[in-house]
Image (cartoon, rainbow, N blue to C red; front, side, top):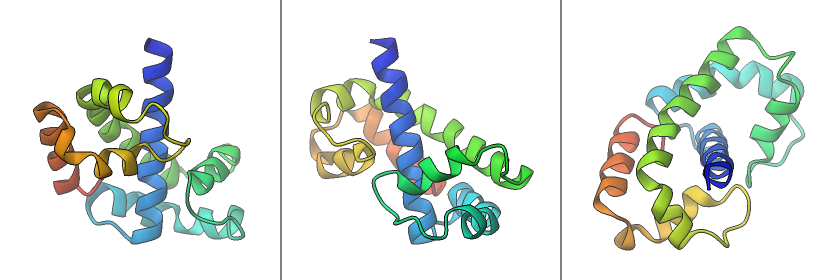
Amino acid sequence: MKIALRSIGAAVALTAFAVSTSVGAQGPQGAAQQACAPDIQAYCAGVQQGEGRLAACLRGHSQQLSPACKQGIANAETLMKEVVAACGDDIHRLCTGAAPGTATECLRQNFRQLSMPCKRELFEAKKGGSY
């Protein structure tokens, strides 16, 4: 279960990062987007956004990324770990069959069925700009 939760957590974090880079989120995610914009242009310009492809591209170029981009990604992942901790049971219950990179969208689609701790954490993450 820890391995599955860890991989789901990574998927949620990377999905949130990919979404933030495509929609221009504010807050910590917006900072990550701004910090990684030159890296995205340099290493991932031809990558189609969605389903974690942009995050996978950045991960594939991790050795070449700027320190600012690395820090932005680390901050986004830290924020999303809190969401995963609060929503792990909901992810397993509602999103087990979700395609890779779509856990965040699955949580949004099932918002009314989420547990109160998960809803609370998603609300806090959204206030911080990470969801």
